[in-house]
Amino acid sequence: MALRNVREQGDAILGKISKDVKEVTPRVRELIEDMLDTMYEANGVGLAAVQVGVLKRIFVVDVTGEDPHVFINPKILETSGEQTGHEGCLSLPGKTGIVTRPNHVKVAAYDENMEYFELEGEELLARAICHENDHLDGHLYVEKVEGDLMDVEDLQEEEETQAEDT
Ligand code: NI
Image 1 (cartoon, rainbow, N blue to C red):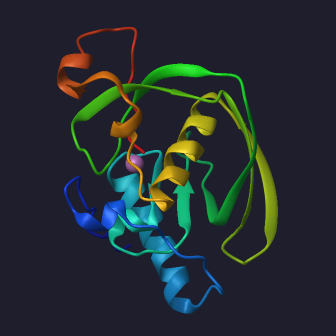
Image 2 (image 1 turned 90 degrees about the horizontal axis):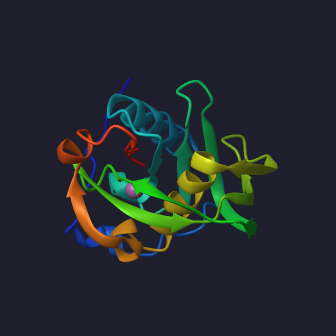
């Protein structure tokens, strides 16, 4: 298991556009494994390669802790519905804000073996896919926050809400 350093807001790399992956080299495979380790260690539900300083169009998502998905060169094909709720990001530790996202997404991508797949997701999975996909184009959720960013600590005092870091 190898953990990578997660870049935080203010690091210029987070505003850059990631590049398509042409092939899964041993180095890319190691990157993906490290991204999963890093995401789980931080109790996150998603992580994009740019967050560990690599400008490749790769992100990982696991909203249950036992269902990891690897997305290489993802394209969001369809979105529908709407959900409004708290969102967080491993690049803004301890913070959360309210963001409206599609409630349903259909995404096409390549997995860690460069096999094409399509996946449909709802609710948190849809939110995480949209959030991670934004990272690949240099966007952070703070650009979409309604109202102010809050401290997760303050939020945890409100029982009906839960923050997820992606
Ligand atoms: Ni994030």
